Length: 474
Image (tube, rainbow, N blue to C red; front, top):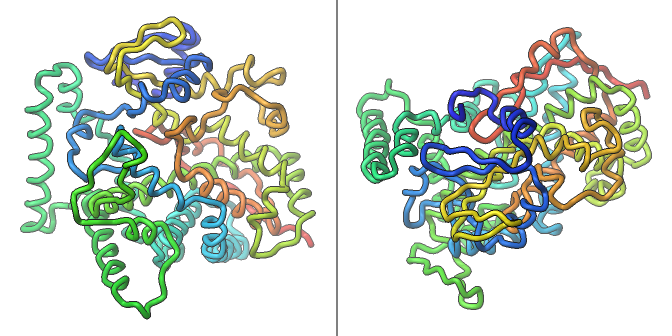
């Protein structure tokens, strides 16, 4: 059933083979369409975006009221305003300013790789190192905070972020009950929120009761935001150039009024929205990128000819700390990363859209409240979209051929695609370039055995990626 399967993303692929490119099921009482028809999805995500601007969320998130919403949970004019304010953080000019910070974090990562090589260890789980690296990058680029995260194996921020990502709201029996009996939603919302508040209250008086990871992170992020706000009052203090600063420059404690008319739309974020989006970037920004890098290591170990082609292309460009412009000229690297994201889409279940107004899509009447869930795996492995070569083969060159706009959606498509896409791609490419310039990756005896994919609420990720690494001969 929908709730009992452990790898739902792969179950969608199985059902698609059985029922076709558009079929429906019920998540409780809510109609859910599983779609791998790219024309249909282009209509939903782009052409009729105004009728599908909301994401599919558990009802408890829909009860998030006022300003305590972020780019994932906000809808309508509130989402549009937040996106409009935060978008400038990811322009080419801003990304170039972040490049030295990314290189600084990768310096620490390369030292850890060197330590592993010198220790003559048979193999190691590179996924763990990538998680520490990407969390380090987020802390530097988003919040301007220098950490020793890559040397501190017990770093509390990393632990809590992992726990927060692993939380399975959909498995809460009360949330499932609300899906089955809609008229109970209001009552169940109060019960669930009451449970959360009771646990927080109990933690204050009985520290041995562990605090929920999201609240632990939020408290510390609020403290960080307060420190930055105080420092902004000092005119002589050097201004930060990061995501947090851009949001705080647009922050206000006053009520923000949203308008459908863009011409009169507010250009501000409420302080609570800054906190909510800070939390979002911390939790969502680190494990997604780390997982893409982990999948890259897995494929590089399995495909030595692909690795050699990448290294040959990297060798054609001199190493420097201004690789942002060089990356544009590395075609094979771009194809390689695209092929990784095609075969291993990171967050396929995060692409869903909820219908806001009954409409007709490609001859199908979609009722208000219905959910459209793209079957990303079926799309990414469709021979009609990705042939003539077998889509099960890892072949970077296939990305040299133009494809349907909805055939490739690792970051979603349309106005509500992933806002951090360009930062993630830059981080992945710089890391791969620097690693493969000095080292080669080989499979370990336990790589396949321990690779097992896991399907969390949002992320499809491996259990671990055990590899061997050797220094390249000069």
